Image 1 (cartoon, rainbow, N blue to C red):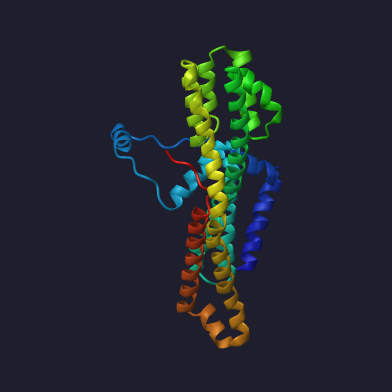
Image 2: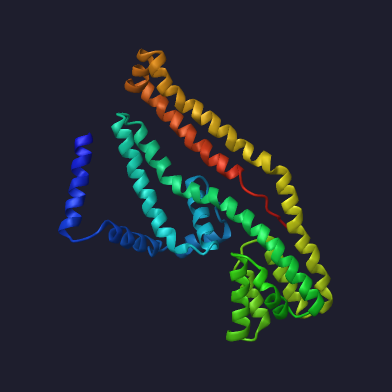
Length: 311
């Protein structure tokens, strides 16, 4: 098997050499192709049925769609093709690893688990991004609202406090100022554009209240209670932070124990180890353990998300 894999990789390298292509160019072209792939056309009946009775995606479909949504929200949609390429490469690596271990039952398990690994990492790292976003939003909305209550001019309030803001919130408000001053003078439209740049329920509620204030200045007293929701979220998140990461700690502990028992069995009882790794029933048990490991990892990632305010 190892010789066949080496021959396959050598064949791929020879094809790239004959075509005068580099692996970097190949991956960039594949990523660009996968990014611009258009979905298949649906009939009108299926479109109407999907709108009337939308089905919520579950399992791996929900994971992939959520990872794509996070990349779009963070302005990294161009990395979607690279994410797909890495997923395919890891799927091949997982299948190759299972073949090298001599366990055919592990081939689909490791291929599927490794393929979803990049999407799981996107979901996991988005937790830190959301925490940072909530922290920056709390500071930005607080100082901008205070200045707006004093001057009743949102452009002056934003321009006054933009130097004190940090990314990614600073870029959003700088784009709002540029659009309001250089592109058009429609403040309501600019606020609508500002609302769509950050996907946060509290921020969008603040933008809606700010739009209403442009027609009725007496509604500006509703802004501070909305900003206070971010403070409440931070306090509650700090209190529950240990509980949120407790499932992750338990998962890491149990995963290390499960994976560590396999080489430990080699030293304790070699006959049991040979039976586990060579017999059909033992290989099926290893495949089931791998399935439980990946399913548990996916569940833990969904449990370790930061708190969000829901209206």
